[in-house]
Structure formats: structure tokens, C-alpha cells
Length: 146
Image (cartoon, rainbow, N blue to C red; front, side):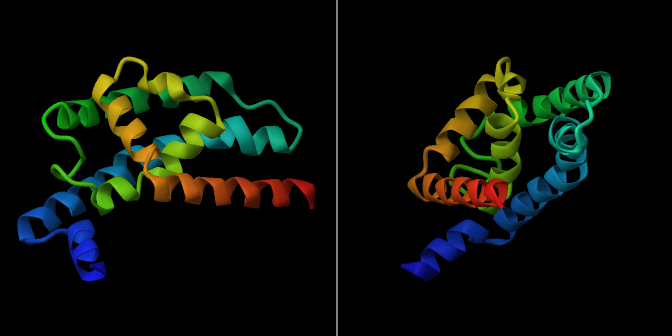
């Protein structure tokens, strides 16, 4: 059972593994570099008692929206990024998407991305993801109390 789930998550053949690697690279090269400055201006700078740069945040959000158009096109054809089943490519997006959408109120980036929004809601509703996010919330609460 575990071997099957592991294989399904990582890809069952070379073609699937190639698609998974492609989407992990898209995330690393095109998605995360735009999210990091948004988080910096919405969270890190305000934690220092300073105001984040709204113009820069908006500029990165606009660029991120363009990247999300690529996701929208892909997800209009298939249910998950790297085919019809939940894969590592989807899994790696969970922390960043959660921080961006839930943690910093940037859910508006999904408003005009029907397929991306459905993909995110599907992933977010998975019981294991719910549990991990619940544990992350507990860790954040402990960090804020120290």
C-alpha cells in the first residue's frame, strides 16, 4: 500500500516523473521568487514595525497573476499539475499557497483563475493537508507566544 502511494506521488513512469519535475521547476523558478517578496512586504517588514511597500507587493502580485495564467491553462486540461492524480508537484505547492492565500489574504490572486482555484480547494480539503495545516497553526501560535 505504501509503495503504491509512494510510486503514485513520485510518478509511475519516466513521462510522469518528467511532468512532475517540470512543475516543480516552474514553481521554483517562476512561482516562489514572486511569492517571497510578497511575503516579505506583507509579513517580515511589518514584524519589524515598518510598513511594507504596497507598490512592490502589487507589482509582484501582478507578475504572479501572469504565472498563474500558465497554471490555469494547464489545469483547464487536467485535474492536477502533472496529470490526473495528486503528485509531488501538487504537494510542493501547499506551504507557499497556504501562506499566500490563507496567511496573507492574497486569495484574490485566484479570483479570476477558476481552474487554479478549484485545484487549490481540492488540495486544501485533503484530510492529510488539513491535519498538517492544523499542526502548522499550532506551531505558529507557539512561536507568537514566545
